[in-house]
Amino acid sequence: MTAALLQVQDLTVEIPTRRGTLRALDAISFDIAAGEVLGVVGESGAGKSITGAAIIGLLDAPARIAGGRILLDGNRIDDLPPDALRRIRGRQIGAIFQDPLGALNPLHTVGHMLVETIRTHLPLDERQARARAIDLLRQTGIPAPEARMNQYPHEFSGGMRQRVVIALALAAEPRLVIADEPTTALDVSVQAQIIVLLRKVTQAHGAAVLLITHDMGVIAETCDRVAVMYAGRLVEIGPVQEVIHHPAHPYTAGLMASIPDLEDTRARLAQIDGSMPRLNAIPAGCAFHPRCGRADARCATERPELRLCGRTRAACWHPVDPGQREDAAEGSA
Image (tube, rainbow, N blue to C red):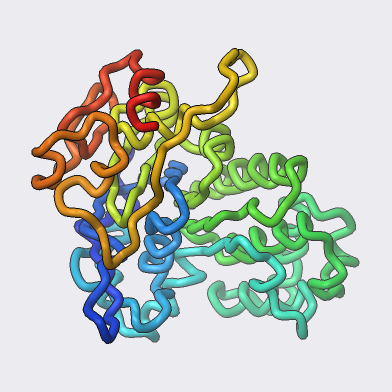
């Protein structure tokens, strides 16, 4: 593994309210190397999207970074003034959002948005920027890119709009791409095309990718490593195939067991009983312990830290032994 391009160290995000301060992210740490795709997965409310927003500097008020550090290529970026961060965003960090229509300005043509983005961040004149924009549309699989440059977002299908968003994210050749649920709004066949495209184009540009999703199929097809989040905490991280086939944390094992398997003869899928705790009601100790069949008194009082469990790292006092996926899933149900 090459040196880390992005380093997130003990990142904490808080949301002040009239009834107290809520902790949306609780001291999470991870890194991503250049050219690597790190997937972030978990149930709704786990803190996936807030993680991406914090890195790119787009937290919605009153949410704020309350602790930790974010370093890009060794330089701290979480404490930069807005103008300095705006110069980094787009040039060094690109973003792909789950709603492509909402991410595109309906009043401007696709060509105008691409050329404006390119000229903002790269030392190119109008002609050079237009040529690069056409090439980006071609790279992302949009037919007749010269003609498409003059069209507006509503004239594109959902899949084509997402390709435009990817082109915009890569317009200034960023070193890091934050992709937040980039295939959620698309049908299954288009999802597969977008995932292949995202992997291909980012590899060609040597960009690191933080891929946020709830879809383990997307994770398995796209990512090198995967981080599993629960209640604003990182509960497991490791190589994608290890996490999928040999999960160490009971929550991860429950997620894996809930995925349909064509070779499985069970009448019903496994499930994790209960739901993600609200931010104002996160339990002490391990946040997952009320839903975990392996929990004991220690789990209810002491918070576990990430530690090596085989080839992954898991925050669990009683990690699942390799090969015990089904038992762990049944214990979590």
